[in-house]
Length: 298
Image (spheres, rainbow, N blue to C red):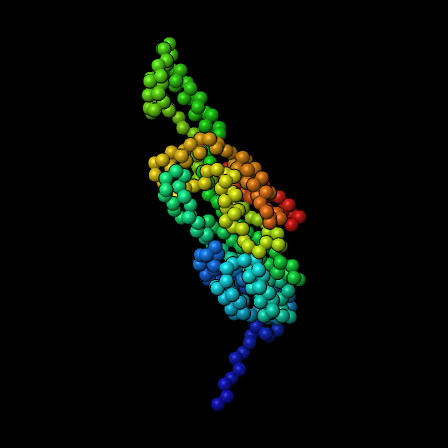
């Protein structure tokens, strides 16, 4: 008995002829290699369906092409080859290929003072498309940091000054008394509010880059902000962090400007859009600032 040929429903004519911009799969689990790490990731893979008469695409061919990501370090060149495989396997159907990779990049970060170190997770996404031999890559990176309000700091200092006047009015100042007052709860009657904050970066890469500059961009952002959140700490590290916050007061506008200037200096970045969110500890709402460079023209 001869085996029956399995039906190919996707090859049948569409009931309503209409091209589609994007068809594919989202949330595909797969490992990727980056900076010597094998990272658990998810991928969204798709192509355009330009032949409006076709019923559908061959999703299994996209899935199998993703196997290329398992054994080679993740680079723009590898991503482009995967996208080309998408198109080669859909000749006559598709002219554009898309790939999004979402992962949490783990970086080991040292403490500020002590010899401790710990792992920090940075959500990252890589979005790429290929159309008419034109290849584009965008990165999305989230960086957490601490922000201390300049206004709250100024108001706190004023209250401390007033408390000093009240406690030492008409008294001769003795060094030991002032030192003890400064170290007491009575002396530091107010503290500025700070909050965990987030920088959301979206960047378009230059064509000549042969590596994904994720770590360099994270380092540049944390250096510009000055108060990246910490991992393992001792009391000396916590004190150093308090000092960094006190000497690094910033509104969300300040953070956005610092990041803008830092990203403009980063090599291989053609355009970017950034958004900073300060999750207010004073208000029930967030403070937000955004900035862009060459974004609409890219």
